[in-house]
Image (cartoon, rainbow, N blue to C red; front, side):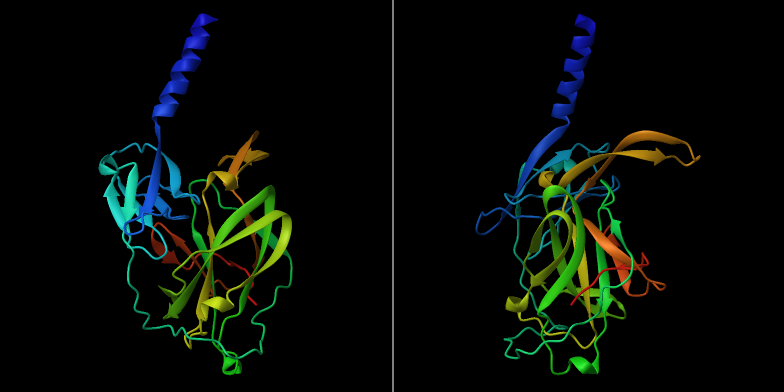
Length: 282
């Protein structure tokens, strides 16, 4: 009994020292930077800072690996893990929006873009393969009198009490996501269950670009979104066994589409035309 207890204590101690708590702060205001993306190159480890700018990071196999920090409104920071301090400051960046016009909205009329019909499926984040999933909405002459984007509607399925996700808005260039339009987080909280949520972004005064627009859904790898579920897992040889599935909630409900030309995913710092599902924007 003593030998077993000693083994458990040793394993627990090793696990504790393999993790560190870090914090991201604004270089100027010293305020926390919430929901920043933290990615370790070559390790496929991707998490987010929480509302207080904090996150827990496991030590990578190679301490010479680089850590990429990407937060809305800040310059991208790339640091070698061995030089990564527990408190890191991010530099705010200035923006010149050449491709997108932002001005005051005066038109009170509105029109819906797209519909949400058909059978939907819930798209999970996974644990290590977090990414952005974006859908393209092309411009139409019908929108000439309805220039401003008023709201975005997203269908989610949430297995925990409450969960949060981010939305990002990109202009389009040659049919793929280009300039990030919103320079502050659009963070949405949803309750448990299957919910159709409409997010009002009229205060951002974003004009629908002639080249069209991409709406991107971002999973947040924060402790409050963590979820586990018992499941039957099938390996590469077709063998089934009981196991535990881990992910970050909420799941994004998508609809099958024959062509994937309008759907892109951002993974490993690269946009790829990657899935044949899409979600709705109204």
